[in-house]
Structure formats: structure tokens, C-alpha cells
Amino acid sequence: MPNAPVSSGIPTVKVSPRGAERLKSGHVWVYRSDIISADSVLPGSLVYVTDHRGKPLGTALYSSSSQIAIRMISSDRVEDFLPLLRQHIADAIAYRKPLVRDSEAYRVIFSEGDFLPGLIVDRYGDILSLQILTQAMNADPVRQAILAELTERFHPASIVERVDPRVRELESLAPRASGLLQGEKSSTIFSMNSIRFHYDAIEGQKTGAFLDQRENYVAAAQYARGEALDIFCYQGGFALHLAPHCSGVTGVDSSRAALEVAEQNAALNRRDVNQPEIEWIEGNAFDLLKDYSSSDRHYDTIVLDPPAFAKSKRDLDAALRGYKELNLRALKMLRPGGILVTCSCSYHVSQSNFLEMLADAALDAHRTLRLIEVRGQAKDHPVLLNIRETAYLKCVIAMVS
Ligand code: SAH
Image (cartoon, rainbow, N blue to C red; front, side):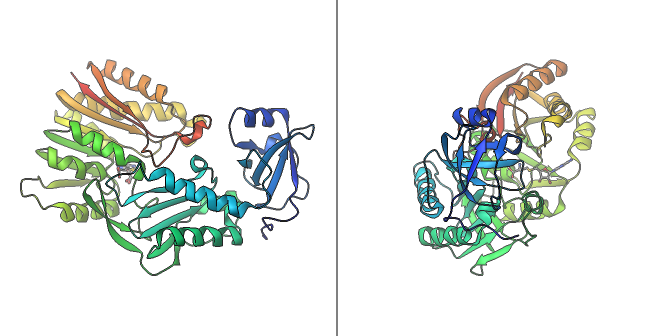
């Protein structure tokens, strides 16, 4: 499907009173059901948005296919998207300068959170990884401008694109393979909080590492001690941060590929002979926790960082049951004074849903929980207060008695 030219003959899209209200409340999305007219607007166009009476509401990027038809980029009239795009990239970089410390890996651009809806860019040392999530960001001139700006700002060895086939399908974009867009380098070793990790742009899961947990690793390590269990450990993010503070660490994940990288990561960091060897176990977390808790195994620190259980609102109850089962078993296995680090990355599970679930689990486990920290995603994944969807990660650190 052809993409529209981004800067000429800008069409107008009229939205319903409900759509206009949503924008006035500070959100940037208008759903397709709130579009009154978008006649012959081409996929991915820059559009002017008005209310049903024709009053201007600003400028947006249009998708002809997604349920989210409009993503606002300005409350003014913007005639050319590209200068604004460059400015927002520069702003995103400047925003992070004082906020990201002791890490060669971080999120450079977080879509709506950086006023660049549909664009995610992560940095792993001298490799940049980008994800294009909308028709507008996929337009050739936009892609070229993104690459040019990132190249000028970072001089990366390479830029890779990570493609989510499901997103391209939802946006009616032609299938495309993940791969290098620029340069040859596709793997590296990066340091985060003084711990080293392998990164492989082509092989990894998601965008390589779970950068949103970067600050939570440090927080968890502050309280971790004794024997630690890192459930859903992936490539060892928490386990490697806990190891210097613990007498033993076990990481559990169902993905053998992830554990192989975890083991290589552990080898990269094994400079201190006093640091315990980390044991990696391939298995289903639910089965393992059931086994361990019924065979009276005990730990001093347990991390739970499962994948998103609620992919949509409809899954909320089932997701909360899943979280509760995991947390209940972990609580039973913690020694008095033990530390629970428990996370949820489901946007549909709110912080209060999550805390309520945890309170229930504590009651059922006959344990008392004292909250030490209630945390969210790292600051390079900015949360816009008026766009609730930008806040998705919960990380609660609590002491069990
Ligand atoms: N804590 C990790 C990120 C975890 S992502 C970090 O900080 O890097 C979720 C992980 O859960 C993935 O690695 C996935 O392989 C694993 N997983 C998903 N379902 C699982 C299951 N039923 N049992 C064990 N691991 C599972």
C-alpha cells in the first residue's frame, strides 16, 4: 500500500464530541469509532484534526487501519512533520541526559512518552535498535529522517530494526523482516549498572534486554540477601544484579535460549571469586513453585517478573489469579524477614489491582507484608500523566514477616 506524502495537501479529519473530549483531557489518541469523517485520507498521512463543528484541535498522524485512527503530535497546525520529528528526537535525547546514569543501554525514544507515537528506539552501546509501529512512522521519508537524525546524534556502528509482525498486520503494512538497516554490527557487550550483558540485535527476545527494569535491578539489589530465587529470569537481569549480595542465586525460565545467554552473562561478570555461581533452571515457573513450596524449600529473596498475563482488559481476572498464585507460593517460601520483589508489566493490571492482589495473597499465605518500595518503569520510559497507557510496569519490593 502506498504511503501518503507527509507534507503536502494536508487533509482534515473530523472527530466526534467524545473524541474531542478525549483530546481535551490531554490524551493523544482518537479511536476509529470517534472519527466522523476522514474522506480519502491516505494511510499514514499527516492530518489536521477538528471537532464536529470544525474547530481546530491540532495536528495528528493518521492510520487507516488501526483501531487508534489518530495520534496527535501537536495542538497547533504543523505543516511539515519532519522538522517536528527531528525536534522531538533531539528533545528525547536531551530529556535522558540527566536521568540515565551508569548504563550504556537505555530507551532513547518511547513512542507517545516522547511525543513520537509509533516510534521506539533503544540504545545498546554503539548499536541502536528501532521499532516502527505505525503507518506514519513507516513512510519512507519519515524512516529516512529518523535514520539521518539518529546517525547524526549517536554515530552508531549500526542501526537495526526489530519487527513485530502482528503490529504490521494491524497497521496493514507489508510484512518485513527484522535486520540491519545500516552498518554491519549486530551484537555487542554492554554495561548496565556496572554489570555486563551480551546483546544480540538479531537473536534476542523483545528488543534484547528489559530496559524498563534497569532502575529496579539496582533497587532490588539494595535489599537482596541470603539465598535468592529469580523466577522468570530471562537472560539474568535480576539474578546478575543480586549475585554480589547473596550467598546463592537460582534463576528459572522456560526459555532455554534465554538461559544460555544468562549463563554467558554470568561468565562475563564472574570476576569476584566470592560471588556465588548462579544456578540456571529450565522449567515452568508455576510447576516449579508448586513443587518447591510443597517440598518446604525456603529462600531469603524471591523475584517474580512474569510476562504480561493480561493482554487485554478481558484477561484481567485470569491475570490476577495467575499473579496471585505465583505471589502466594513465593510468600510461603520466604523466610521471616525475607524480601519479595514482584513485578507486573501488564498495562491492564493497575497499580491498585496489583497491590490488592498482593494483599490477598499475603492474607492467604498467613504472612504480613511491609512495603519497602512501590516502583514503576525506569525514567527512560517516561509516563505521561494524562496518557495512562504510558505507565505499565509495577515493581513492588516488600519484606515478609
Ligand atoms: N526478569 C527478566 C525479564 C522477564 S520476561 C529480566 O529482567 O530480564 C519474562 C520471561 O518469562 C521470559 O524470559 C519468558 O521466557 C519467561 N516465561 C514465560 N512463561 C514462563 C513460564 N510459564 N515459566 C517460566 N518462564 C516463563
